[in-house]
Image (cartoon, rainbow, N blue to C red; front, top):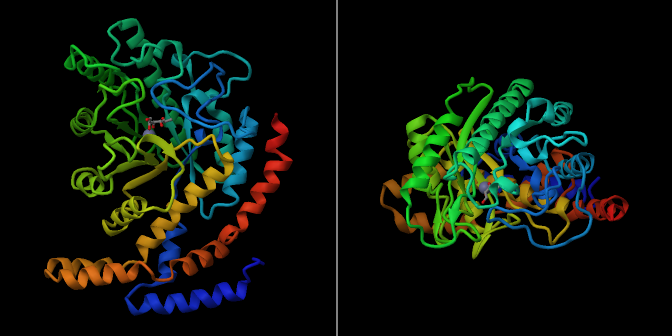
Length: 423
Ligand code: RNT
Ligand code: ZN
């Protein structure tokens, strides 16, 4: 029994349910719906985007900062940490794997030679737990990406290496989809860009376009594989120019039957990604997301229950797009307990979705369409202090995961018994 008391949780839920009922919201329905939402949990929070190749530092204009002890060093440790996180998160989810997390048992396998068999342990892991798997080619932290250019490199030998990598990764993702009976999202992001004002902005983009044409010319059954491309405004060391910009990839995706992934850390700091979701939903039947928290730049801080997260969740729910928006997380904080970072981020994403499910969107829409903006503002603001927490606590209890801050004790135990012994 929760130390918060099962009785008080049920009683608070009963009262909350009554408040929400009065504005036309059915809490039982909301939590039933929430229990079916799968979030793609990024494996790379567990080890600061290190992977298992032991090539040295993270490159590509992204950075994990901090040196909190206890990070996972092996596939076994990473999987154990994921298990610990999953035990503290309600619902059934997906794991998002990067190509640099291949399990090659002491061999060195070049990225363009990766095969499904190098990921069979991930499939086994997912099967045993009833999870789906998503995938990403790794176009960074590699000597052939040291110049900062991959698929747009002027040297065809380097470009071709990365094209082969992209193709190999789609094959691996399709294998995930087939093995697990749920399509795998294969997301392509490259760091390519320039630190300073380029002399040619079109050339690299035309080379990237050609490389993508080669990568995507192989067709797979969408039952197994969903392809998407992730744009960006800038990276560290690539401040002046990003080859794979948003306009470039959005156009490429629209013209080639792929999807465009929105990472909410990849825009100018005052741009809201929530607003882009319904814009894309008008044209695409799927909108993949990387949910993160940018602080002044694409800093990939742990996802908090902040206004933009709630706004993103609102768009997903009020557009009735839970089956279209593919929610994935993408952050990496090395300054706090990494397992706790997962738990906090995923639980916050779920809380944001629940909060959006407890809003009378139909009523608010009517007020907007009827031009009743005073009542619209009033109701929108009053809803903000409705008892979301009581519904969330009841949901956690129903799902047999710790209620409120109770999960942290389990992290503390895991930290001292397991993570701190990894030194
Ligand atoms: C980088 C992109 C990309 C990466 C991961 C590790 O800016 O957001 O998605 O974070 O592939
Ligand atoms: Zn991302």
